Length: 222
Image (cartoon, rainbow, N blue to C red):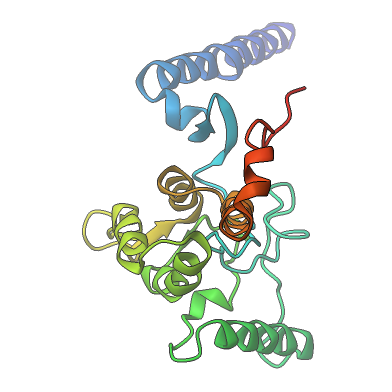
């Protein structure tokens, strides 16, 4: 009896150290060496600052950015509260939400059919992708807000369109955060474009006043 107890205790200690400590450390170390980007959550940075992960979606409300699909995770894309809405197709709250989103989207692009993923949530509420059709639907708004041609915006979409995995799994998709970061690289941010447009119009209308402002910094230091 005593020998059995000692054996059981020793086996518990050995397996705890082996599988609860050494094995996880080995796997973590190999992941950091072989796949450091994936092991650390595929974080995206801009000017040395982490702006998000390509695995977790974000909400974008500015008209100059591509918008993600709706999210039922917390208040929207809450990584600590991942879930769908769990509302049935006859639920009045769901019907009202979808109808409101559809009306808003139809007003934005009256001549185009609304892609399904722009009015439906994903099961996790954290989907970082939209369909190429959902991206195409938003092209006129993006081009207008950023002062770009629609062809330039479509080229950005094509650069970030991922095909089916292994050629047959899933559907083509576009990562919204990566696409929006590319937009900021090829054109000013929407609010900056608006400010520059305001100053340009002011210069044209009142060049004398512009001369008096030529030494005023747009973004004060400190």
